[in-house]
Length: 482
Image (cartoon, rainbow, N blue to C red; front, side, top):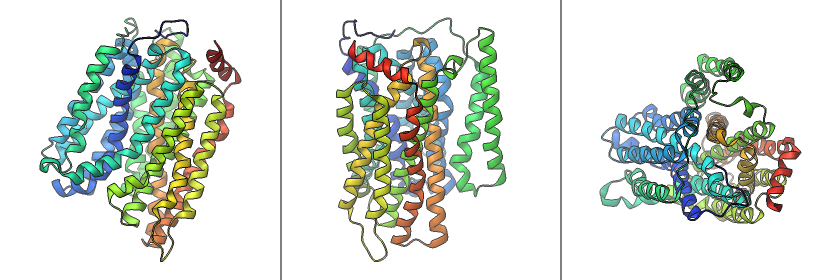
């Protein structure tokens, strides 16, 4: 049940929020922290390039495929129950990753992590309205933005520290094992402070819709993850094209079930919610630019300029600081002027990616890490400014019983955007290096080529946010004045 401004504030709500943030942080950080350990994993298991790629890819694929149905299961069986079950599954998967005896065992344990992540993450955003009144949700969603920004940047830093410390001779294993005590604390805090949110027992699960959506997402995500490594054969493009008619079949099936009064995986009402549709596009555009940005920047810093994983992570810390500063300001603004803030955030991110090429080393030059501080700080402030009102405005008008599926779908779009950005920016970056060489200046120019994609996606966020209905901003503004 969503809280209103007239309700008595829920005791322990900020502790409950901390548990949600910890789970979200673990999930997001687990994507980036593994990248630092790839050389160690390859050496420990004598793994092939393909096996190492699947350590990363199988988590993203499993997570994205299951987000939508797991969100709907949260609506059916209760969001707290699904969240706790997901954290437990993720924690068990992390323990098995840390104890994996072989590369095949590690890949299998990563599947369990992906299942757990898909179970818990859709519930995080859906639980917020049950914890906070509208006037407090701006700060709550700002904290999710802060968590996302910190996880994306602190993952490489923490991974570098843990691997370098070689705790008890465990080498790379602590990057997974560190999740175990954190997961246990998150479960205990959730059981104590998050209210037991009952699901809609009469809600049916659209199994056919689950199958169609999973197949459509697989046809998009598998080519984006594996296409470059496979050399972009013709059948990869066939899979991508096949996703279009599958998407059409999925929409038709959802409308067909709605016409018969049956449950839908993605409620048809969301298709008619312009705020949700436009907002989902904005989320996809924003997250198309962020993961790929950090991926190519990490390659430039470590491979192109010889920094260690820890030095690379520390170099990108100004971005986290920017997210922290902007998220603090976003919390004070609450729900005010969301479209203006999203547009401003997009423009700040555009400024970041346009400034970076001017401070990168050219032939005969060495990297000046201090020169990256200002662009990255501006970029972090852009992400922190945009992400809080974006999630708030997208989910503000969703019916209470559909928040789980809406949240799961929204984060599916986020994952699709991230996979798209990684594929396109990786292709632009490595394609240039393959044609021109691997000198310091070549890495800088390759980064410039890749960043044109981020420039485009962030500019889309700044421009298309104004396509959100005016009434949605007015409703959010009114919750502040109430």
